[in-house]
Image (cartoon, rainbow, N blue to C red; front, top):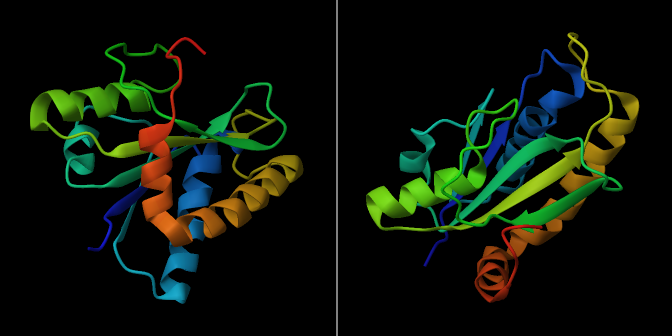
Length: 166
């Protein structure tokens, strides 16, 4: 059985490091094509929208990718908890809201992760900062290893216990 995977980056490339998710998708898609790997779809947008629930309903694994202002070293991959809350942030809907909506509408819930990539600069300008590019490359290297075994990612997701209030 071939695993269906969606890599979905979001952010605003016109706000410097906020474009990390979009840049990740571009670079990762190029690498997947070079490797000749099958079963991958890619999407990139300014923000998540309720229509994205339909885009994930036929997937086994979804990896959302976004720039982060969190106190993390360089990047972190966390499971997405099903959440009915819409976060009022620079993005209209959270990955958890999209997963919950997918479950509510289609009765399906793919294994879903959020790849947070540490960003530093958020001005109205194009181009990712030097430090954020380092983090982007570290995240790419890590995900290239992880994605070679999507079944393990899915299984790990199903065995992780976590709190929605982290």
